[in-house]
Image 1 (cartoon, rainbow, N blue to C red):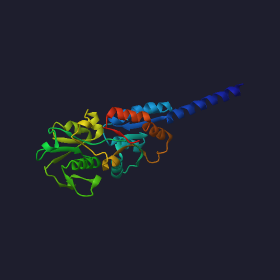
Image 2: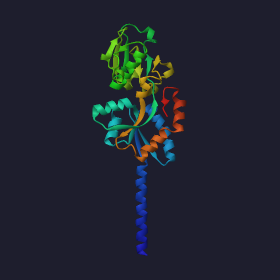
Image 3: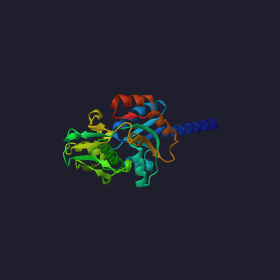
Image 4: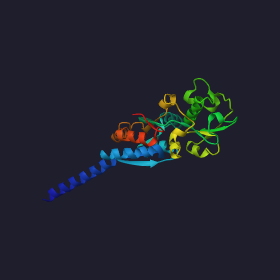
Length: 266
């Protein structure tokens, strides 16, 4: 009888430990910027719960820490950046980040500050743009799209201020940290603002002076992605997260909530 109880106790303990192990494996830690990424993840969280997963969402307000946290293993994934930025980050920091899914596209917008329209821009007007390389190139491409500047032929998404070959209005390009761009509108004539920071600031893409063309190079190059460290692509939790982010529930939420400021790509 004692032997029976000992075996029974051992079995209970083993099952308990297994359950704890499975519970741990069912928790996914993801870093994201507030809007729209955290908001979209909240919807995915509900979808994941149906499959027994717990999604822990950690909010960040910069473009560096979420990547280093994934690289160091403090996060399982992040969802805040486009693929071009991730590739640039890997090259500059020696990280090993990879995309496991494209989720959405956020059109860049040119928003009015002290000047209401491009026609009204005075000589020497100031236009604020993101100061990180990939997003600044994107901003410059939008300014070229609107005929405000001309860039060297072929520079594409590697464009910098040094590649401007024509600037009829002698515009001053002011480089600012991406998250601070909305706060500069009162001080500059216009600003090119990332979609997520525009949403955070209550700016509507429908009110922008100009928006990236839907068929332009940016739509393909700047798809927002779910990012993991290389080697984690086939983890079951990551596969479940991809499925949730590309679910019908998430798509319906994006289309209803953001009214064109965020475009699902699935």
